[in-house]
Length: 330
Ligand code: PMP
Image (cartoon, rainbow, N blue to C red; front, side, top):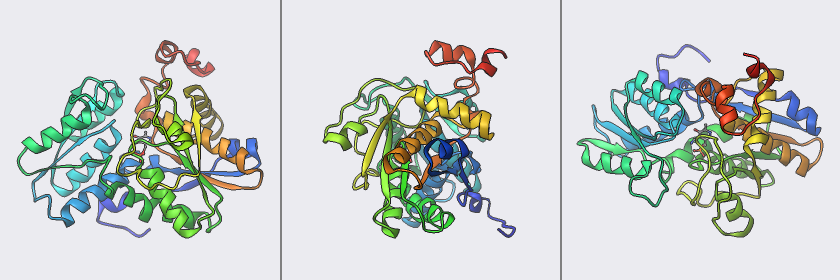
């Protein structure tokens, strides 16, 4: 890429890496899309950019305006960076259960942070409803509405899917990832199916989410729980509508953490738990499709965002998760 004076052009065009451990474990070629390499260190920079550009194109936001959003954190970080580059304000509403690092990052970027207690979606105090109300009450503000605004999944149809297709030379048998808003799985799924309808699209759902049972038997039903941030959906969001899901897996935190630790110690990748769950899902998909297949998944965000949680022995113990030996000794 030649020099650019547009910092927002740094979003997307992330590297794709063949993951040695998962590939050797299955006899397949499993690739990870390095979304942690975006400027905000997560897959959500793409959605943030598309949502803001869409609002500008529709004339919904004026110079000096404000962007309001409810988020597990990563979308807020993406929006704050995009807003800074374009001269907008950001107000970010986040459940207080999310990692310290995300809160500190949002404050450091200049976002106005509103923390709310974790609550079910049916509760009017839920972070999504709170953010909509704040947007309505704030002059010259837009509500990004990442869950139902399909500018989110468009970022993955025209960006992520297109890039994966090119980076894999048009030879891909399967794709899997987890869903938060569903923008990534729906967008990449639609984009890849448009290239080759035989590509198998599989959802890797964490415990505590309702989509596994929805795609398996048509009923939204959640079981168990997960400490993974940014994923785990209980409804069919606007972005998930019409998503081409062919298969589904339920992945436990322990299974995801095993890959988080192996990818760190064996391949030098420091990732969050949604990435571990995605890689665990890719391994399951590879076993389902058989040896020799080519599968892609998403490495969603950097592990540096979870130093106080996933990479902290006390926290892991409190959550009933195994402590890796190098952390136990630290
Ligand atoms: N992983 C992490 C860490 C996230 O923050 C998100 C976004 N909520 C996702 C995965 C899921 O992405 P999407 O919203 O596109 O489903």
